[in-house]
Image (cartoon, rainbow, N blue to C red):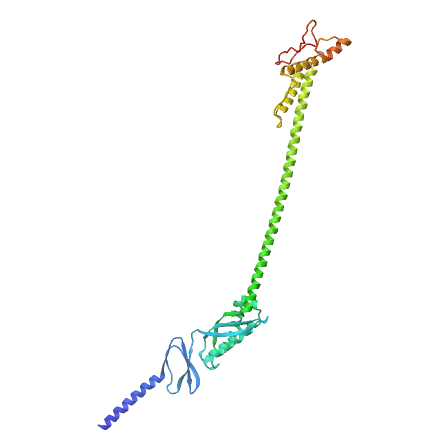
Length: 349
């Protein structure tokens, strides 16, 4: 019985040993991680995610490196700009391990190294810029820091994917001064715009007045031309009418001068009646006397142009040229009136 029991114990021990060896030689790597393998303290290879087998008791897992993108906060630090302004700056860094062996064996304290390298380059880049550039060119600052830090960590098997400056905080007195400066600049621009607007409005107003004066002068010129043309035509018509009357008188037609004189007489009376300040018109003669005068003028014209019956002697001719003809043995004066006016008896001489 004892040998049998000893055999069973030995078998069990062998099975347990095999199981331990299997557990020691089989390694499972989770997704997003890489393990380094060391044989007698020396790096040999890297285990990828999944099931991996190593030599038990000879190989061991060295470093477990996170291959996912990681975030590292950059603490607040003071930076002196080129124009001697002190600002408080903080940021954030994103990095990823590309080579687990380099990240494990090329640098000690990976995160601390990245942090110090980032802070140093932040001071270098931002210290070479003015405060105004610092506040307005944040994207340019991020690109410059990223380029420098990524080049510096490449031997470590890392990739800096992004560096962002979170806050730039100038001192309170500097912020107040910047606020006053911004207000003054905006007021200056407002005054400039207002002055330019006033200048433009004055120019446009002057141009408008100029155009108005030009148009008014052209209108006056056109009106004067039209008025002169109208007066010329009126004079031509008047001359033509006078010529027609003269031709009629020369032909021995005494009725033409009667009509001409009567027309001018009536137009003069009409102008007197149409005056704005004339309300009452006092005429020194009656309408019948006016007709008689017209008839006398006609008789005179008839005698002057040879149409009357006066003699050719001295006293008779003179009487015929100055007074209307008087029939012998009659106490009343006979006048020849224009056609349509009729006749009228005057007083005695």
